[in-house]
Length: 302
Image 1 (cartoon, one colour):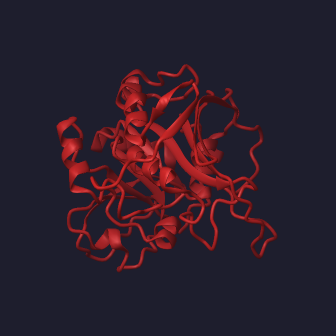
Image 2 (tube, helix red, strand yellow):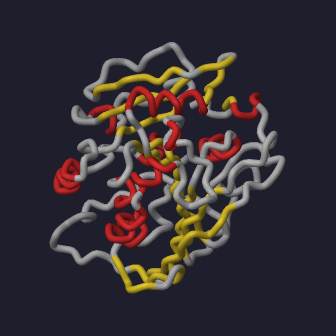
Image 3 (cartoon, helix red, strand yellow):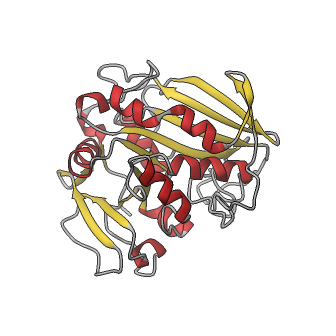
């Protein structure tokens, strides 16, 4: 969850972190090579490419959607309110390599505020490489917000080059900002309709691949609605302990308990300095598992 930013990511003076390939086995590789081999654009064209996802990219429906989260071994998704204290350099490089390969990055407004989100692709060299590969200069930044409670000094709103879409059920708009802001207004009975919102992102903005970076409520809503195809989970060899005022620690999912657990299939496993990087396919939802009412988000009110 969050930006996991590192000013040195992408610097030509720094050697990329090496990942040990555990499953499937193979030679060590850097984050860019690993993500290139996933060929996420091809997955969007074929729908899943894994046989286990629920993607509908092949028929022009919604984007091929992935969650990218980090966690301690005892399940904490943040330390001191931030995710950056959990991962290592390899985690940050993989985070940025995934960003560099997708059409859009989605994040909840609460995470934007806490993590101080700025421009999605900071490195000019990465933006040039995207253009050479037939992608836009940088991914579309999609902020999910029910009440449009984003401070005007949010770095992303102060970036003139930012490509920004607010996903909301509200008819209101943000105050004028330096960023070029558009809106996807998807509402049903006053609540955010995430399936309709993702379909509109595909149709209006040509979003074939979508990377969601949290927070936990948004992750849960996407999973409950059957809108997630893959989960990237970075496991840090740390034990953080602690709990919040409710007696619970922040995890990668939050909100109501699922009526049925979402089943995953392990697709690959990497290791760097005792950190594990797991990639899962999300199995297709069982028919009737999620009602239309459940699919309409009621918790994304920030």
